[in-house]
Image (cartoon, rainbow, N blue to C red; front, side, top):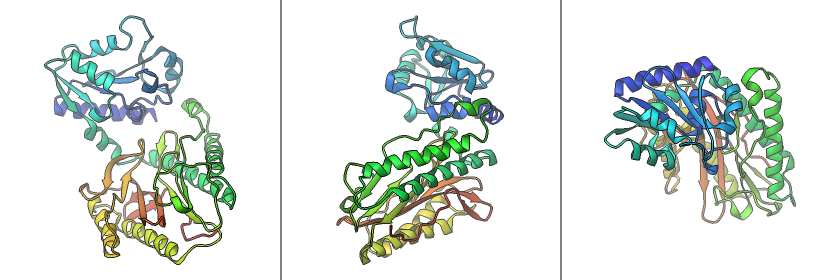
Length: 384
């Protein structure tokens, strides 16, 4: 794992040299993990910056709260850790000032850098140029290594375990939040089981606890696409939709996954819409292979919905991995050519204003002649 991170740092430094960037500051937690292996620290919600400092050449360093120092030492290959403490000296600012000295071009992930750091750099580097490194860093993540794909397959197992736990809990009279609790438990148990296969080294510092508010709608709320689980009870005749995209991961690598079930029965309209969502996703999946434009995958699926008479079509998918949203995206304006090793969440969805909806989502990896599921689970229409 560390050799991969070290190689990615060297690759970024080479790109920085080509682009004339003297130093890059990475603050987004996913990017900090990608380059250093440090994760699950207290962050900017509590006013505590952790910042990777990557010069154009030579040793990188990480500025971090002193409270996180002992944990970070066990997680990372980076030797130069620069702890700061509340009220002592310039806190984190001193090391940033030092890193900025004499630098003419400064790299940031502009839209992922907290304003606290962005504003400080702007104040301290008057006359210097800011270069957005977001796409440069995004391109580094596009093609996953076999090791990364293996981790994502385990994230897929966590996602499937979540759904199985939910499916076993769903029934008339069960509150939505009870289903969400089952999802948390099922995912955590599977995550822990997979972690127990190897607890050596850095593996001991990943937590199996899955978290975040579960996206879940039932019955008349099905058209509220990202509504969270509430105290509403599930009724016979309801449809239940669950999105696991904000909770399913393994070792900091994320997948997208969605499933929908019917309680007791379904109407002809529900059956029609659900099957349309399945077909819309299938059309997109059938397009996925090396050499195809991401936008063409989207257009094929969007045309299907348009031919059915539906209106606006949002993106068909997005790259996933270290972040829940990576590049490229399967949308109308992204002409990135698909390559073997790219990983995507691919959706199919139809929502009607009357509350009827059909939705499905899976994660896949692009193979030499098509794709392979990272989230293999039956999606034929199912009555519970």
